[in-house]
Image (tube, rainbow, N blue to C red; front, side, top):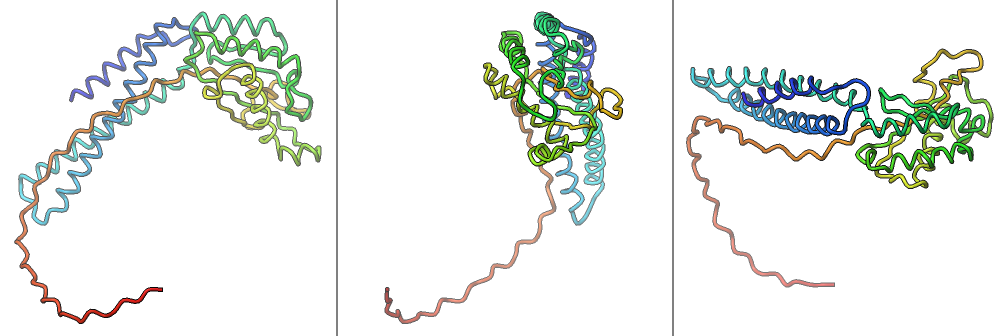
Length: 294
């Protein structure tokens, strides 16, 4: 089928795009176009699968199955198996692309790397994942969510980069993390509940600083993982590495147009005998009663 050929071609093209380290803007644009096409193909495959299921149900519901209907049913079942395999392949490819979509253009990556280098101890940058990491010990007081003045100034510089032309096509995801030391301060426990609440509160605080510095809220999202996504082993006093806020730049896929709906092939069921018309009895005339209103 043509859809399978297009899917295979997209896979071949994708393998030719460099996916390691920083990439040129043209390659980012090509990657996003492939992502968009793969999503559209997934929608088309799902639509065709729904049609195949409808044909199968109609054929199975026929009171008498002749040889022609049996052959049509077997063909529909075979098509369903092919569509399921192609749909699984398309979904897997989209998942792979989504996990590999964080390589940033060279110019943007260089700006973030330079910014991190000018803020040692507070900020670091991972070019492979397109992520800026803030050390919580340098950003917040112990058990608090208020961003320090020094960290606010650095985040204002980050906002300038995030609003540059190279970065406008990227979503800004702010994710908070903590170590595994339980929260004991009654005031903090009442305010945040636990480390999960603290991590979410810190992500919101960083988001708010970026928003005040000019980053559009429509481009931002927040999350908090508490102590459950460590990057280093915790000891009795936790781990400074695990106390962090991460800011990811993730390509925003272009809107996907709805795939054209292909009308299913109608299944002609055997004609049933015409029902005998039922004649309703003539209405009985009643005297009109007077109508009273309140």
